[in-house]
Image (cartoon, rainbow, N blue to C red; front, side, top):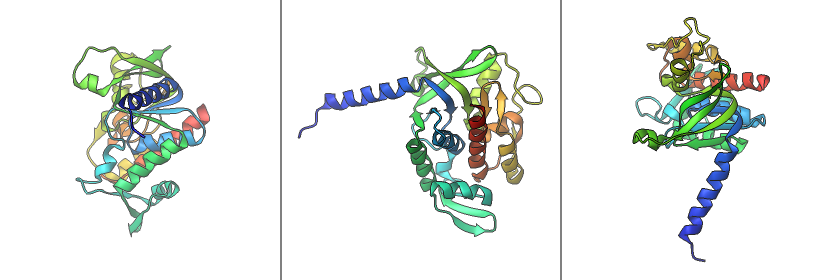
Length: 257
């Protein structure tokens, strides 16, 4: 049976249109498809919440693909290994409290399990602004990443969410938009983004989980974004804190919603 190019095009356009329209009103919108954002989306979707994750890049997985200095191995500690076990990601003990996993297996499995749990993932879409009502973040303003890269004057679209999660890593992109444009005071010591410090892996891993919480009404942070916003060092190529922070935020949002 011959393939028709126009039918192929129609299938893609019609299917994507339905998927995007369905994602315009959700329980939780997550910006950033790294390990923290994926884990957060997985646990929320698993608990039957309507979740949409938006990643500006073509690939999903953030910095986990490259491990450390492009050596595609990742390290997690004992507590975080339990999350990898739940996902069915194989680990190997290096020594006490240090476990290795293949980064390619880890990322691909996180992506697959999140989608199969019901999480909707959209790549190549950027959050260029937020929706704010009564000093509360209640959605995102979206545009194609290619539009931003080409600096084209193309208006975006909007989507509504009961809660938004910033999982954009070091950049803390969504929180920076809120700080710059909304007039909302952040729940930090200064009311503004504190910024991240130089590497201290042990302290940073603990703070990543502690700092994963509500940054302002309607907006949560997780992953490295949490340390950038609330202040804390970076941790380098150890990913346990990322996984644990995503699970923590999902648990908190499950209670709130």
